[in-house]
Amino acid sequence: MNDNFKKALTDSINAEFNDLIPETDSHTFSPRFEKKMKKLINQRKKPYYKLINTFGKRVACITLTIIVASSITVMSSEALRTRFKGFFIQIENTHSTIKSDDKANCPDTIEEIYEITYDLSDFTVEFEDYDEYDRHTTYKKGNIIISFYQHSKPSYDVDYNTEDAEIQEIEINEIKGLYFLDNKNYDHLIWDNGDYIFNVNSNIGKDELIKIAESVQKIESEQ
Amino acid sequence: MLNRVVAIMIAVILSTAGIMEHKVSGAYIPPDSSPQYLYIDNCKSKLTFSGDDATCKSTIEGYSGTTTKIVIYQVLQKKISSSNWDDICSWDHTYYSYEASFTNYRYDLSSGTYRLKSQFTAYSGNSYETETKFSSEVTI
Image 1 (spheres, each protein chain N blue to C red):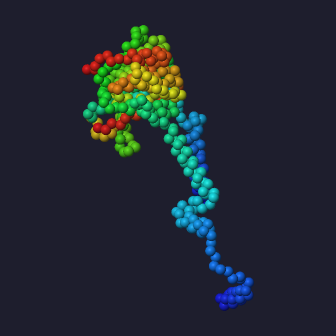
Image 2: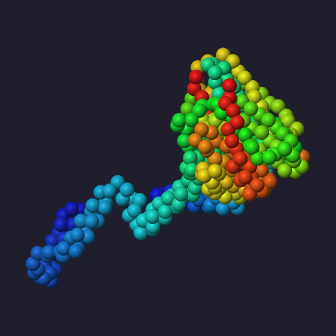
Image 3: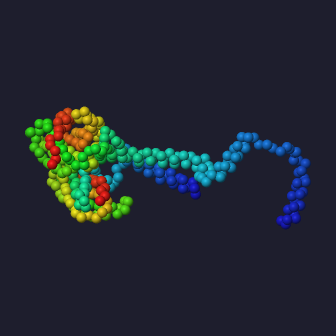
């Protein structure tokens, strides 16, 4: 088709249908329509337009956001970190790491020795391990084991078996501390007297162990 | 193309989230996992310095009548970058007891940041578990 033929054809059609086109005033679109058009035009200018330009994509983006947010929540709950009664506790699935959360104004090393004063005369000392930062004595009578620890606060960083255990608050001589029963039926008491961290673990029973813990007293000064 | 990318991303995140949910609920057990804290009551890894001399101490308490043997493996490590450590020296010892304390020394160390890696293997007969505990980092 050459250009002249195209022009002639267009002219003839225009002329033929000119009378059929009604005379109209210039159209004014409704404010609602104008607003919608403006919104569509603005949306096209956004850099992420291609990500949300269909209903399906918008649903996908919202779903993605919800899933990512949920995943982050799940991940952060895997190791629960908390501060409780002067202790920093990081709870994992099988164990917990417990540290002192209040190391100000306390000795860096053991300067005063504390011992259990409860009558353990029918127990034998099974294990002793003393250094300038920690003291540990284990007493044994038959199947009953009592482990007593005195820790300097800056060096206190111990992993405990707390699987299936619930760490609770307890008072030892009006000092608040931690208590839990582990899955081997050993009771654990941990408390901070301001200078040192004490810990007694035993299968002797909770009530007896509290009496033993309450009997812990300063014996002498470390030379 | 973009739809495919979004679909793949959703699939990956859904499967990851599914695994995590199982892990938290306790139903998912990784095939290479080993049991933990069956034979260990508590353990500690402590690194202290006096000048440039290090004291490396690892302590563990198991359960009387359950824990029959303990192997302690210590590695003194020096920091070489934000997440990389060099092994400086190591020691190990076996104890036929349910509790143990293992102390070693290393003298004249160069300045830097150190930590003690303590690996505890606790046995109950032929069964065993291994737990690793790192000390706090110490800079000299």
